Length: 163
Image (cartoon, rainbow, N blue to C red; front, side):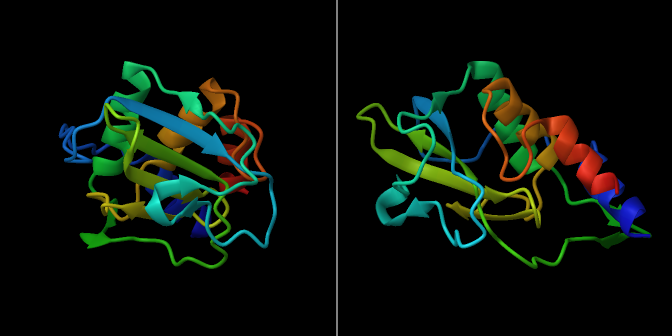
């Protein structure tokens, strides 16, 4: 049952074709990763600043296609089973990854912080879907050659979810 639910949650392809998040104007999006440390409680600090232990201090600049994929991933409709929405229960929340959106003056205007272990997230402003498409987000981090917590590749993440 757990495997079927995880597959449904990860592979649901009902994406909303709305590129509306975040609503604040931005000119760049950067991806960040942190070491796999179970004591991590948050990786984006007040004022939307990356926590100091970040692996890639400058952030990896996303391409236009990656930004589009990210915006679709956070805007998808939550998956349903028998008409009921299925949202996972967070059990660890050790974020190791984040996307930060910057305006023309390079000030952060939005962020999405992720835990690939429990499939939890924190965002400002709130993302349209409480459960983004983690497979798409993992693919972006893999393209940028950044680990996802304990997972070095999107396939490793996908395999762990299927076990």
